[in-house]
Image (tube, rainbow over all chains, first blue to last red; front, side, top):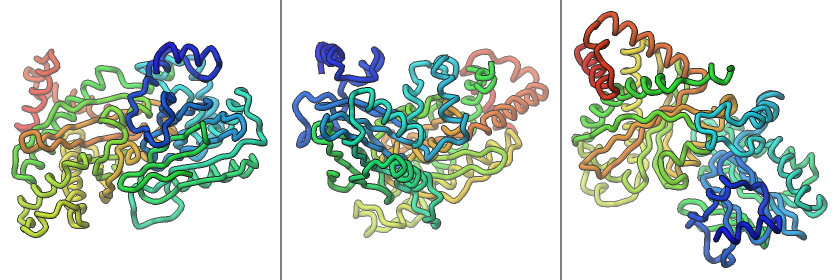
Length: 223
Length: 243
């Protein structure tokens, strides 16, 4: 994608949550994009661990290496606006742990990092409870309507199979927490590909709302 | 101010790298014996990184790797990872099997891994971790044990993320030590990651500082004479070897 296109998109408000640094990062080196689903010239936004992106069609949001992490996508079926959050943890440790402390850090972003550019851009996306709230808020501000929103989730695997397959793994806790939150928000969960013992890559096509899940040694799966 | 207290200084990170170098040397020797081929070790890299950046330091986050995960328990807690790129693991396993006399022609030909192969991989990781932690114990007098190794083959980020997620509860910046072992004329590059938990980083550094000051008292000239980085590493190693 050319810079011109980016600027144009920005002017039209098509690209959200974006700054100059961001712009360089998203130049598509992502060869993982599947040609069979890709619309020509559709920009791919990469969502790193613990980050979230909200954008609209025809963009694609991709996120790689989901292990115990869970990617939640929320999509407005009519307006084709959607968001993806790469969630790492089921909930905040304490009230002040995730949300509030991060808010402080946002005020003084340089404080915690040797290299300020390496800071997580949107720290509220790390934990499930704050992430979903942040996604909804962001979607709402971009014009999405609550009644048309549907959610999907992918990930939450237990990467190392061990003797205890109980609910102790971070992956399972993530899934339970996200389900609970979506229930509480009365958000229909219309698709999921969760659990198991393998990692996943996903691509979220905002044109159709489809989420393509790719796993090593397995075929692609559309949900 | 509080943020600064928690962080290690650049000098401390350097020193951590130097010590890790000595320990990694021991581990490389162990690997050489196990594989019966020359194993080189690069100077360990100590990274202080935000969580999303961690996997990309090693390679593409979606690169397939075989990974042995062990936990550290005791005075220092955290995670240990022994990582072999997926395309090189068969070669590594065959080396190990040949060296240990397990190798036979039938299973040498097939290119897929069997459960036995994975357990060989786990065992290599296990031994490396043991050597590594023993070296830390000898030097820093810290009692650290490692837990039972578990193996998985998948994308590198998905294998690391559980451990990173748990640690990112408390800190935004993660200290990670990367040791590269290069075996068999550069054909096999393996990584040994040490990710001490946030609470343990300080313990580790404190005891290193203590050990260093003890060394400086004992050895006097040899140790105080250093100034350059490379110099420091070699002296450190020699001191250990003499013991």
